[in-house]
Amino acid sequence: GENVEQHPSTLSVQEGDSAVIKCTYSDSASNYFPWYKQELGKGPQLIIDIRSNVGEKKDQRIAVTLNKTAKHFSLHITETQPEDSAVYFCAAPLAGGTSYGKLTFGQGTILTVHP
Amino acid sequence: NAGVTQTPKFQVLKTGQSMTLQCAQDMNHNSMYWYRQDPGMGLRLIYYSASEGTTDKGEVPNGYNVSRLNKREFSLRLESAAPSQTSVYFCASSERGAKSGEQYFGPGTRLTVL
Image (cartoon, rainbow over all chains, first blue to last red; front, side, top):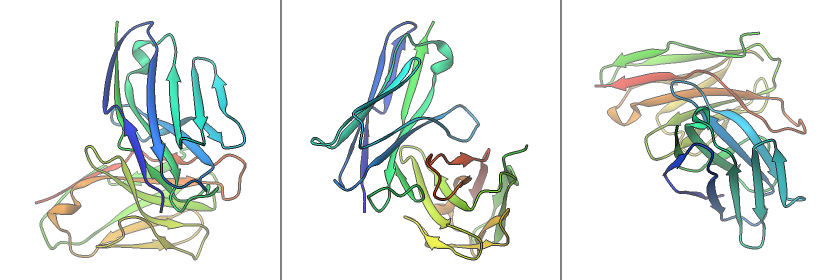
């Protein structure tokens, strides 16, 4: 099955700076990579996802890049704001491929944005 | 639209006790999931139900059973709770086969096993 490693485990930035979180995966057949944001006391919520037919996807201040050769994908948050403070998780199909069902998640990154 | 609801929000059990965590969704989704979340380990899939009447094991199924009661409801049962099952449990749902693989999560159940 797929294995996802996420780094860093904690990230502290000043408001307005950029934040980057990176994940590596093991199964070259995986081709769906979502990112979830979890605020304190709540369940995770999808913020962006990417499929392997594209190398980058943007949505306002967030973007995800995918390097299939190196088997890693990254979340980029620009112009960070205090409300971006949360735990961020990357994920990939548990059994590889394009499984919109079973996912395996990274260990999570605690992002803190200081005003 | 309530989305995904979970009951109870908090539960304390003694080792060996049993309990059932309830989950319901009102989005008419086919697929439902149970995850556990432990510090430093992210979310790990316990069981998955692709559609009503079907269930499949995830990464950490041992010690758990599930029932897909109908399209709306998916319950998780601990027959004999152990301290290692202390965790936060999340239920999620998604539309099977949709272009977006988005999973919608409930608010979680915090379980402590003494």
